[in-house]
Length: 229
Image (cartoon, rainbow, N blue to C red):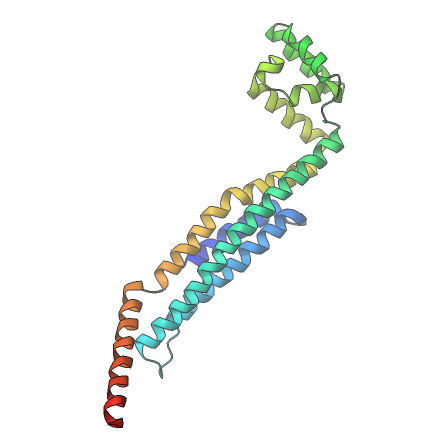
């Protein structure tokens, strides 16, 4: 059987090394993925660990039952990562805005109106000057508005915002990048778990076993009826 767990371990370990060492919220997401990885590793071991006192059919049914548990855990992990990751992203974004004083103020529209009246070069110089002077009210007006509202190119705005956040709140920005990275990679990891479940057993064989068992039980019941007569 392909070692899906080895691939999962490698991806999670790399994510932890890059984003989650001593960082609580990304590390919390990593724990969910580690638990799923261990479950996948368990089903891979179970599939090849044969009990000599057990028939092929009994082994297949035992592995299939375990695989269904791993599948359920994968779905639970998907929900946990999505829910927790979205909550963490909102929390960190709010903390960044508070720390960097980037909340929209009553003067935001006035700043935007001034920017719209400038030419492209003057806008860029005004934003760079606000960045150098740490004019948070001006920057908040820029960062919270799109090109239509400010006249500023969206790519330039995002570049300046990232530069400002790197200066003002590098730890929180790294934590936000970590949360986003775990969210981006979670589907890939859960897909590996799904593939491990599919590789663990043959549904058609399990159905065949169940049909044969039902037939055997029916035959046994018919026999019991005959010997009672």
